[in-house]
Every structure is written in structure tokens, then in C-alpha cells.
Amino acid sequence: MSFDVEASASLGPRQKARLLARLGPVVRVSADDERSQLRNRAVALERLAARLADALREERPRRPTKPTKASQTRRLDAKRRQSDRKRERGSRGEDY
Image (tube, rainbow, N blue to C red; front, side, top):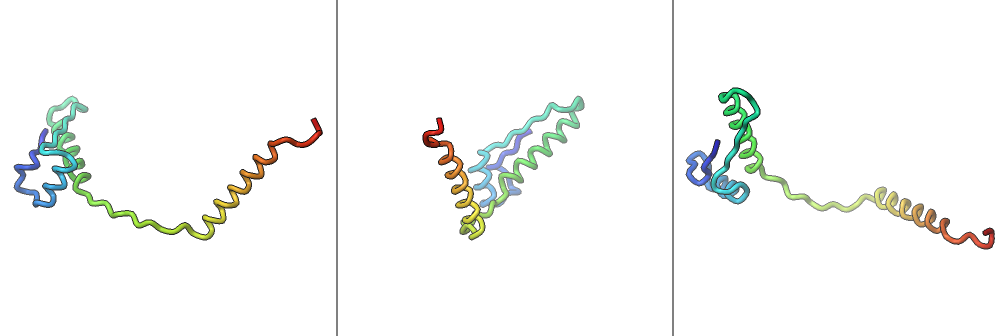
């Protein structure tokens, strides 16, 4: 099953531009999961719809946030513990 993005009359100009950038001029899907040709066509149509919907979805831009005071404290505590652990592995004097 194929869908011609450029020739589609059901898409607006912004939608066409987004699909062309993400999927290209023609979107193709196939299905041979079932024994029935009719069921395979239905599966392919579902896959095509899902692929188009996924390509048209706009993702919100991530806003960077500052680390919380508690997370900074946890990170520094973990670094201190690791440092202590490694320092204890070193030479232990004249016991050996």
C-alpha cells in the first residue's frame, strides 16, 4: 500500500511539508502477517495511518531546568563516598 504525499488533496501545506521532510514523497507499507489478503490490507492500512500520524505529531521542545538542591546534594554525597572508597584501596602503611 502506498500514499503519495505530494498529490494528496487532503493535506494542508504545512502537513505536506512536514511529511515530505520526515517520510519523503511517497510512503509505502506492506503486510503479510495474515493468511487473508483482505486482513493484510487492513493491517497495512492501520500501519500507514500510524506512520502518518507519528510523522505529523509535533513534539514540544524541551525546556532545560536547573537541578534541585536535593539532587545536587545527593550527587556530591555519592562522589564523596566513591572517593573515600577508592582512597581506602590504596596503600595501608607497613602492615604488609
